[in-house]
Image (cartoon, rainbow, N blue to C red; front, side, top):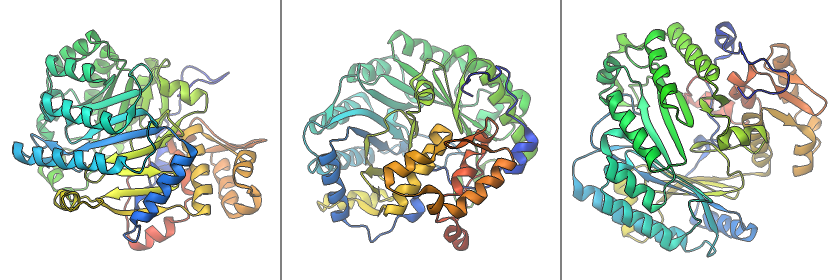
Length: 469
């Protein structure tokens, strides 16, 4: 938790009873409207019109690159991935990805600076050095990447697919941030999820990354996996603290074997029960805060000196499909199968099928298959939700000024619910509007849901969400 004036250093926000009372299912709000509102009637012209508006506003750019291939299957994984040892298949995908990069770049004005780029997957480092070099070169040919001293260029790392030479190659290309998929250091848990990576392997890679002077290291952890206990996860957290990454993501494992078949390969009886899972989350989060990490929000923690912590303090935090970010005004160009772009007031998604994705590019067509153009009401509600989830407050005057509305009239129904939430301790009513309480930050998505005009529609159609805490 970011410590504000007069806030005690010993925080008691990880209150199990409070969490149980407010832990409902709901969207993660990496966008609003959420991806459930994307529709196939979205056209190429909708996209091009958004790019033109974006060019006129001269916004900076962010790029996301999806590389879906993995060498082996992690049973818990719910990502869009392909398990393969077929190098020809990977080469074919890379060729089509390069086609998409060239195709996507054409309507964007030249020399618009790219201040942020992230390569995710799958396992980006499953590709070999020459292929990674080729991909970086092709992106830099078609987009204006600022220097690594001015931008954030990150890549997801599977520790089992990288060595010292590849770490050096990535740094030489321009990457300055690494995200390590850790999940858990316990050997029994690693066997259960089919991801064996000894602590010594991580220690060596972290040392080498620091020798190469990477600016930031992130660790991804998961709680709720088979055989995890409060005691075992505490041991992992202590080892993480010793390794001292700059950022930590502590994700909640959602067991949905009916949607993700690989999850069915884990012993369901070995999963911690709901009560223990909650205790694990509370204990791990409290220990990270005690160790000096700032609770940025939801499942993100960072050192006080990290850009995310500073952005939180200065109310400059933003949220997109990769989670929290510091680049609020950047339009996001996403390439690769299933990737989602955010351009001006438009969200659009590529095909989730590699076959369909590649065929579209072979035919010289866009791989975009769905999207949504925000209505004026969507735009207002997006600003409200992002203010709540990123800044932990809602300033009525700022929303009124930005959108030319009378807040109390426009959101009369929603404000009745907010009064109820104030009585429950989720937020406080202030002179400027509403302030999320320290405990309320854990259930901030519940407050955001008040302003989501599509929730009832989704409930009727049977769409399922993860728990918000």
